[in-house]
Image (cartoon, rainbow, N blue to C red; front, side, top):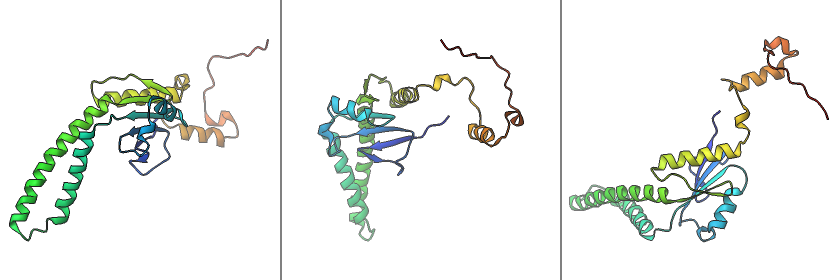
Length: 192
């Protein structure tokens, strides 16, 4: 079965939807409440509700200063490049190339920060792989799924269309009308 995983950064959803089966949230130093996310705070936050994994980024001042510079430069270039003066256009193009290099450095640094991020899930501090971000994210989601839905292992056969099967069971007057095979081990209950 597919589960929707909500992706959040500093309490804000990335896709605009707030209703998801599971939730992965990244907490950055840009969050107003970042100082409240000590280890105990992260454990408590990850235990709220059902199905929350929390990744806490380290407070890297140089990264966030560089990010602010990239944002300001990008905005300045967009607002001031009208193409009417060749000298200004050339200068803005040079700044744009510098900003593209800055963006590459920011992306690389962010990937490293995510690899080093502390991960908390369902009230536990997890020690996950630091080989690459995809592996770390997959491990966090796997832990989240298995420990949120603890009875998944009870399912022996997964139906291709469970909603159709459930609708057929609910709509049938008699189980024999559905053509379900009830041949299987007989389970007898004893009291005592």
